[in-house]
Image (cartoon, rainbow, N blue to C red):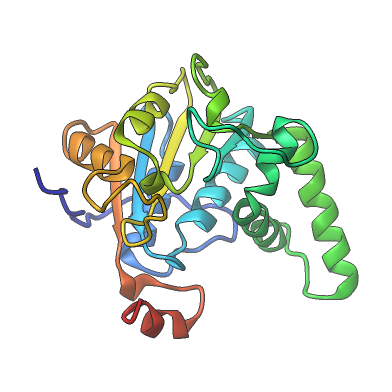
Length: 242
């Protein structure tokens, strides 16, 4: 069946420190991310680059850990897929996975600067980076997807990124890792499929959208459109050519 499109609704918007959505889609996403895990345990968000899906997910996870709703954030980035070798990068599996999660650390740095109200100065950059490294050390787990099999993640804020580059079987295996009082965020962009063995309609993100959208109130599905790109105004124009 076809992917069920998002129908925007009116929400009693839950705020997240000094993080403010810039569009209806972002507001819907942040509401779903901040909702209690027992009400909305799974959030699936599809959107092009620059629509804010990673930034808002990390902001909600950071807020969730700080307010003790979650014990930690679990990050499973792209290029470390179930069944694949994690590669020959130096360090242990967490070190290797962090190298592949630069999008997470870049966005976490920005979130901390905003939430902790750190000014834009050379000295403040060092302060923000130090706070980021401290938070990562205390409350972030970088887990390669190859190590996710058999785990049950309880009281965690779990972020799966680039799910459009996973197979339906892999995506199904990951979504079943959800544990008690956890929030699972599944992100991707159907217009950027880098796995040569997959297409727009036979990848993990499309599979989950079709199987879960509209089936249960416990799964929130958000589709961020091109006109919601906020990273840089030029990207809206670029997106129309790519």
